[in-house]
Amino acid sequence: QVQLVQSGGGLVQAGASLRLSCAASGSFNSVNGMAWYRQAPGKQRELVASITGGGTTNYADSVKGRFTISRDNAKNTVYLQMDSLKPEDTAVYYCNAEIKVTILRREYWGQGTQVTVSS
Image (cartoon, rainbow, N blue to C red; front, side, top):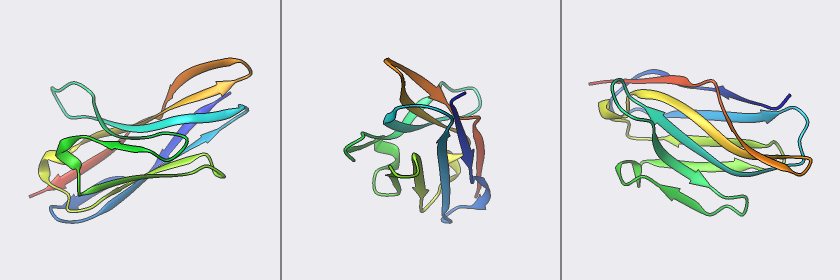
């Protein structure tokens, strides 16, 4: 069974840094695009950052220059380095990946992790 397992997150003060990790586990052929989303209370889930299998990255305007997405293909893991955190970054963060199992590709989601930034 394929799973995305997240780690990291927590409660920090504004200006601090956090790093989130998300590892794909189980039996699969390949991991393609990976991404981080977040959902704040009362708001829709939004894309924070994404990275292709080749390493091309994309960021939401609100996090450009502060967050960095990266991946370790050997470990099937994606990271989100979050610097200069702001209270408005408070949300549940979810990783997402397109994973190929035999000939099928489908999206998987991590379990979510809370990030809380106090002012």
